Amino acid sequence: MKEAFQLHPQLAADCAEVGHLRLSRVLLMNDSSYPWLILVPERAGLREFYELDPMDRYRLSDEIVLASDVLRSLYNPDKLNVAALGNQVPQLHLHVIARRVTDAAWPGPVWGKVPAVPYGKKNLTRRLDELRGAFATP
Amino acid sequence: MKEAFQLHPQLAADCAEVGHLRLSRVLLMNDSSYPWLILVPERAGLREFYELDPMDRYRLSDEIVLASDVLRSLYNPDKLNVAALGNQVPQLHLHVIARRVTDAAWPGPVWGKVPAVPYGKKNLTRRLDELRGAFATP
Image (spheres, each protein chain N blue to C red):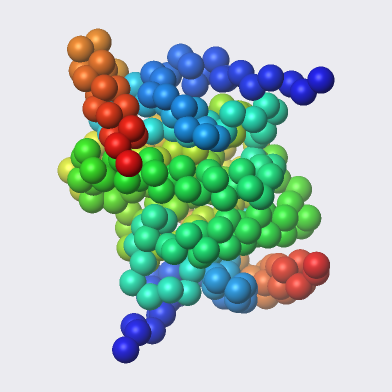
């Protein structure tokens, strides 16, 4: 029997769910310092990018572009950062982060730079709503 | 007339050339702390992953897997890190880095963690030779 996909508890703890694409679950990192999406391909047991089937890799590549389009339409970033690291959370996940030259970590990468600043409940709800709206817009 | 691709001078300064794939120029970052490849799609004027044509994106995805296979066959890493950041060097380039749990930056990302430790001339030549050999092996 095929192992079922389950979101890693660390990702569930650090993020809020935006929704589902054809391959990936879309999460919002609960850090108001940056508009920061995470794509988690809903395939059980994957740790590395190369472990995806080629068709899933191509789909993930499309979903990275979709997430990029959403971030660009909402937040007009100066730069996008795209990364699959997974040194600390072993489940394969892709970061797609909207960067501004004025943000807390610029020009460095965001990881481990400054402590996360969680959204308040109201701001988190608002951000999730605007993201869901943008993903739903063709 | 189409603008010609030229490698960004900062990448040329920081890296040694391994060779060419169908889409990307393959570079070795001159930092002996990590086996660290950089793929630079040979398309002029690109800064972001989403700017690639879809077929180029799919090809880049294949070349990331090829670079991953090469690093795995030679260095048996504990983890691979794949990233397109470009906050400091604007030309689109993809990092594919072989990480070990004993390396200088683990479990953090490699960027800005510890100063680069350049290969000596002999070790650089040896590493380039072994990488070229591995890329040439089907």
